Length: 252
Ligand code: NDP
Image (cartoon, rainbow, N blue to C red):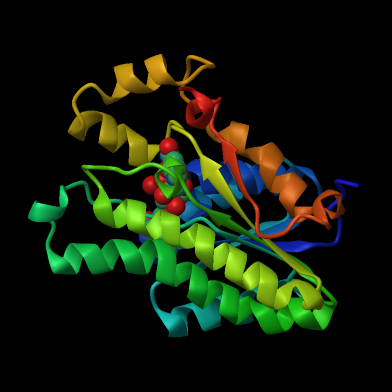
């Protein structure tokens, strides 16, 4: 039910953090992984990490905000691996400033990287998934898909948008046997949140106090949900937004 042997997955931003945690999960279930990110050196290290676990992995230098680069990503994945079954739209960024201090260029940067990228990549893989008779798209939202964020309005808007975009492609592509779901991670220890801990006073204490499990998530906490949503086990689940948050979103 969870077997991904013979399947090929693109993981955007898979060269570190949550993307790498998900790539490890998918690789462990048998999928070949194509990491799509900008930093080639970091991607090479992630490929080595996956190969050391016995996986088949490669990287393609990609800017997910650039339609041409995204088209080249899909072409390279199919040329190398012969097919495409799974897309994880994980690449993301944040610029932490309240709305009254946030510049328009910064607003667009966050929206382009977190939301428009998911549109570009999903649209680009759709023909290949349809040709295969189906596929899986996993979009990464956030707790800020649910909650407001006084210090990150563009991020929260982009992550709320991810949920509605997921529902929309889930409806549109269900008859193509493509399931699209969103994952809403809680506070996971990555480069992105390490920076946030420095920039947002009291964040670490708040996360520990508010998260019922009493800890930050590790990137490997994201592996199971990736396997579930990429595998036949989730074939009747589409358009869902699933928190993986140690209970953060249900704590009153
Ligand atoms: P990281 O900073 O570790 O990872 C972000 C990844 O996105 C990097 O691999 C980066 O690679 C890639 N990326 C950024 N911009 C682009 C671009 N233009 N083109 C291609 N790749 C890009 O952070 P996380 O692992 O924490 O974040 C991963 C996702 O999870 C994001 O969408 C984030 O919003 C989300 N998330 C994270 C949470 C957390 O607590 N950590 C909580 C909720 C959601 P490179 O620089 O090489 O391009």
